[in-house]
Length: 623
Ligand code: ADP
Ligand code: MG
Ligand code: ZN
Image 1: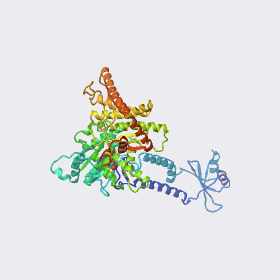
Image 2: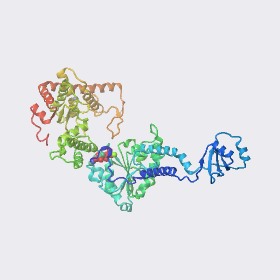
Image 3: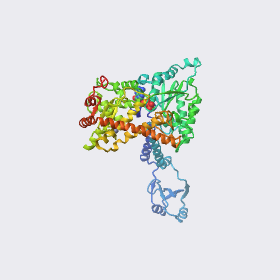
Image 4: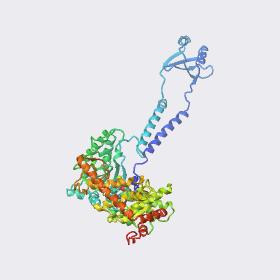
């Protein structure tokens, strides 16, 4: 129904070359069945009767045996003279060393010969059967370990999925926003449509284009759209598909992938998650890094070995361009980088529109308001949000998806699912209400703060409640005033608890953490502390596309460290006392707000405004 993050490339039709493992398995199975049938129903032509050794000696005594054949396996085959009829074949096993046997045979003048027991092919097969079954089982396990849909005994084959330009094509229309990326990729599209046009002019087309962007920004989607736009075949393989437990497999898969690509030119080879194979060599950790290096080397070799004149363009995607081996980024390889950026407010609205088309939407749903309420969400998260909203609506048997469904979906995506059934004691609920009311109230009495979106005491995820603000637009830089107000709002919960209970709870942990982090950044990164000046302290090893700090090198003296701590503390103290004084002055308002929260659980901006006696935010809140 809807795409989700994990299944980002729904094949427009099933990949070709399916069914091969099935045919193989069937064949294997038929052979075994056939052999069994042949074994159990074989006509017993050479009817050789098995007799005991004593019966044999009896025959010998009675002189009824005409000839014997002593086999190397200790079996005597023989023919009876046939007093009882025609010559009868028999065989018997010699159970013990019988020294009198040979003299007796000779005495009676019986024709004695020797023989080597013949082993029929059937016998060989039956003896091998346990081994065949054993190996078959191991093979089966390995195939399963590699995931479904793979071909038997073809470890070295690339498992690239090929998508033909049938069915519904993905085009640039399906990718909202991303104007810059589309513009850059348009060149690749026009080249693939008519390679001659470019080669005639002697123009050089990049062999490899690297799509760089945070997870979920639509890199995979974009690559697919390029293939769809150009109307060429598209081979999709994820970097991790190359890496297998056997050394050399990855390399041969790379070879095979390029082989396939060359055969079906013009086409696109798309290597998703390139960083899985493309990490800097020599920086391997754990096992199997030899294998990864071999794979990478093969990739480099293949990329050198062909020309974009052949009509094959290699796209790759990564969210860690910083860890890629520099050799990959050299001219002649992935020398062109296209940034796939996080969507801004307008683009989020466009993405919402694309995905909302697939669900029945209530007419009052305001996509631009949802876009505004989802800052920092990626395309994939927005697609997921729409899906969640549809699920919420479906669960309640509604005919259309309404605004509250989107609200709930957003809270779930951001904070975890609402735990309406979590049992919270009355006292705890009251404290939460006071705490959240403290956050909420401050939104209205700080000059630079974003307007409040809503405040709730319904537990979400691990939080017992929350107060959310709703920025009017995306901002890429923040003023000092805004940050200070944000820190003050963080202290709202703490200050309210202190004001009413004269003690605070562990529920303030997150707030205090956030406040401290922001204050530290003000001092160390944004140069906002007078006593330290506009200098950054400590350099962070923050890869550009990862929102995570990995380490911070400390490269300042102990004295400076003390100054930094002092400055941070000063900012936090200031915010704390500002929050305390505002809440103290409006203690009655705060109490009313908390009461309303206890009865209503969730209050939106305008409801809070009417409780506080403020005019409604004309035309904004419900625009
Ligand atoms: P990435 O490969 O960058 O991690 P994907 O291409 O897998 O991201 O995106 C996952 C899903 O998110 C897509 O299948 C699509 O449904 C949605 N999506 C992401 N970006 C966009 C966009 N710009 N327009 C429309 N849908 C998008
Ligand atoms: Mg992807
Ligand atoms: Zn709080």
